[in-house]
Length: 278
Image 1 (spheres, rainbow, N blue to C red):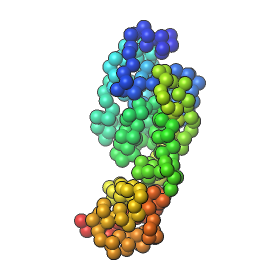
Image 2 (spheres, rainbow, N blue to C red; image 1 turned 135 degrees about the vertical axis):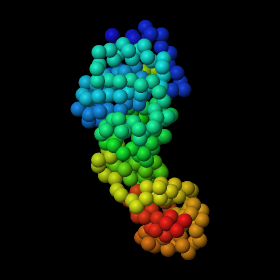
Image 3 (tube, helix red, strand yellow; image 1 turned 120 degrees about the horizontal axis):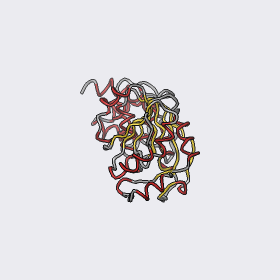
Image 4 (cartoon, rainbow, N blue to C red; image 1 turned 30 degrees about the vertical axis):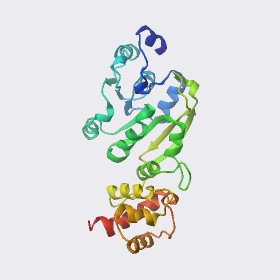
């Protein structure tokens, strides 16, 4: 029986507060599971929905741990995932989970999810900033958000979240998914983006300092980086100019024109000249 029929038979009602837009195309779902590299892996899914992606992942993965916030889907998932011994469904809000404790149980794993749009950025940032054993994230997100994740410096889409992702790994849009593929149909198109923590990325002397540097760079997009430095770190202009010279950044530069790697260099200079002295 198809997921749509099971949803109807179970009397399920979609809840706007959870941003529920489900997929049912088996070819697309299998392609996403393939994109994720789920074969033989432990996979963490966030937002199981009606279980369509969960089934596609289970066909490839060694184990699937799926979180779902809506307990109204318990009956649905008990039917759509019946007989799948390598799937465990947890009915809790993932954003409230202790990620460190969960990673100790999972070991090496990857994330694959058709994410509710409203949790995309906060959830992504949890993995970017806290994860120790996640190898990659393959996420269905709003298309414009996917473009932001993969943006290049000095473009309108480039921002703090882009720089944060680039510090950890490589982000790439793998496929675009039109709104007609979902039910109920959302008002925007989507894209599958993969963030690979085993490719790209770079080291910095202090992750906290890097986060503060990125925040400073995008503090006010119309102002120069020098102005943002004086405001964010409460330093005088002479010191700000010295820091920029040490990071090989010219005067009059705005933060959004700097690549994540150059922001990393600036972060290391700030760590020596500001953070260690505070």
